[in-house]
Image (cartoon, rainbow, N blue to C red; front, side, top):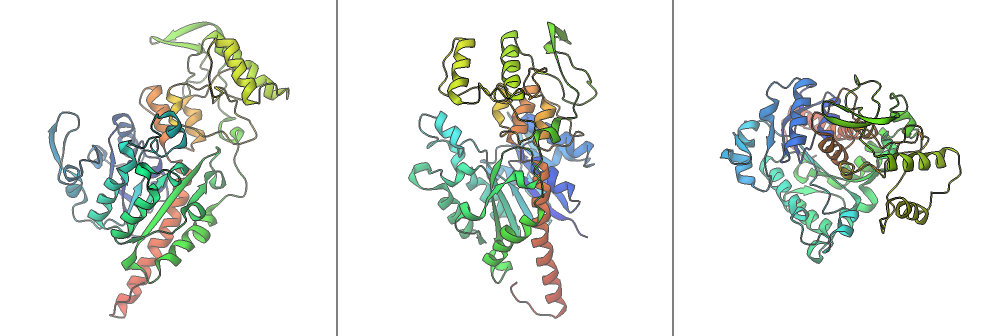
Length: 423
């Protein structure tokens, strides 16, 4: 079967691309990402796993807001170097699908709480406009726009962002469903992701390709995509329970100049190296995890956790800083914030008394063990938290393929009869 040509926008380290490639049905023509660390990881993955010898050319490290340069190429840019541009990379290929989602910080409720203006003036509110310029340029049969649930309530400039997005999409000749809250809010735990993570998946199809695009979209959300749900939800134990334990040591030590508080027992597993923790935090982690394991539950309320934080650190926080993962439940959401600290992602084994490793965060995001994260630990945590879980992405890719392949089969049948009818 002919591969489906796809472009990935805001690609990050390739969570979406990984899932789409896993189906065997898609060819990644190009990917756009402006941060260097995730770009380098995506390039490495495309080269070593997916055998793209020209991976460095296929990943355009560039600011999508500079759209004309993105299309036409740029030369000797101080920050981004030189590239032939997306047009020459596409080289007259028919682009069937565009996937991706703008950075979520402007839409996330947590981001709005932290920002004094509620993210009203953040430029990232409007990055969907740059995404749509790429859609208009290459006219795919469909596109997938992924983001956080907060996008449903974000109102930059007092106008709901979903209203702005819907207007832009329809003017470009595409159809999406009304009431995204009802149709497009997806619980990823139902698709084999072992963490509490919901995402808005806006799927749009070209109006000119279907007699009744709304019916196609309703089928996608309520029949096709749900057919890929799993009967049982995976747990933290399922995801990370078989990884070698990392226990604290009596004296900190260094490996190649880096300080460690926990002994790595099997460094052959990529990225399963412990973060450094001071003695105070190790004690707190042990106490909190033991409290759950022994079913004492002294520290399950927000107020108890805030008191503990103040007692042990001397600081005051308006939100509780700590959370212990439960073996037999799903993890809390793996966020980009992990690059700052792991206090809200404490390992459930009290004897290990630590936060998650990069590999554990990757597993909870369903990255396979052969995906080697090659940047600093901080950059690795950040890109993992920002990614779309590849396992869900693969199911999404299969659902999208059903729509695209069915459409192409219908077109071929019409061509045989030498007449054209909208499908």
